[in-house]
Structure formats: structure tokens, C-alpha cells
Amino acid sequence: MPLDFIGVRIELPSNTPILLLRERGGVGRYLPIWIGSPEATAIALAEQGVSTERPLTHDLAAALIEELGGELTEVVVTDLKGGTFFADMSIKTGDDVHIVSSRPSDAIAIAIRMQAPLFAAPDVLVEAGIEIHDEADEDEIERFREFLDDIDPEDFQNPSES
Image 1: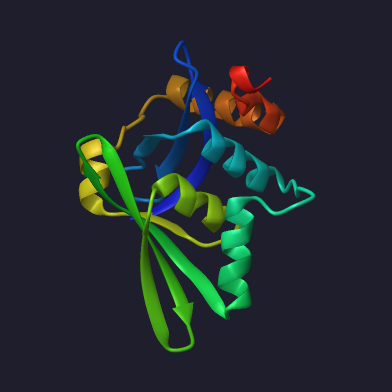
Image 2: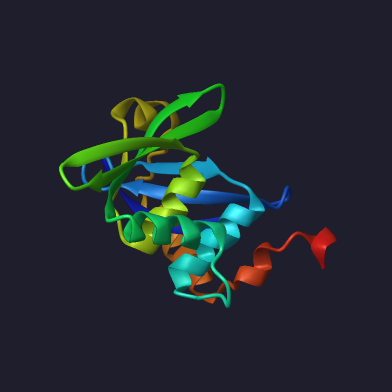
């Protein structure tokens, strides 16, 4: 199923970043994926179009794909096992398509940089998708989007690194 990237938020009180995706069409379920702070920062930087003086790991991966003549054609959240999500990146080079297994957070950080489409296996959405139906919830999603517009990558910095 095709997905839209909604953003990254911090779950309180644990201060754990969550990557939020939404099913496009269909039931319109939301897929929350708990991720690490470095990945949240990388995704937020890409979403805001911030470039760094030196390439970050996800920038480097995207540059390698492009430099080697590849194209990231899609990222698919393929599975959920024991609370851990799995993803595949499809990279096309010439007539060949290479499937590279990845953590969803890394794959999505690269996909945002390369503007590649996001998908989830139907089983994953059935198991982990959350349906939101009433207007109050839609208002909450809109407030969340506004929050994402105002967030800075420094907000994801680990307090012990300050």
C-alpha cells in the first residue's frame, strides 16, 4: 500500500522519536514506527532541506546510489517481527533492480532525500496500522503537522550530548 510521510514526533514522557506514515487511499491507517534519535535528526534535516557542511551517512548513501548510476525506486516496510519493523529499498541500475534490506528509519531517511515513494506490505498495516476516524483526531494530526513545521533538528539532540 502506498504511504505518505507525515513526519517525526517525540513521544512523551520517554522522549522517544516516532516516525509517522499514513496509508494513501484505502482505510487511511497511520503507521507509527519508533526510531532512534540520530535517524530522527537525519529525517528532520532531509524534510526541512537542511544541508550540512559534510554529508551525513544518509546523504552519503543517497550520493553513492546516484554516483553509481542507480535510482531508489521505492522503499517498502515489509515486515514486523517481535516489535521490530523491516524494510527493503529497491535500487534500479540499468535493467537490474537490487533489493537492499534496511531499517525503515534509514531507508526512509534516504527516500526523503531522493524523493522515492514509500509503501507498506498489507500485513504490516493490518498488524500495526492505526485507524483515525473522527474530526478531533484529524485536528490533532493537523496540529502535529504544524508542530513539525516549527521543529528544529537540534530538538532531537540527546541531552547527554549537549
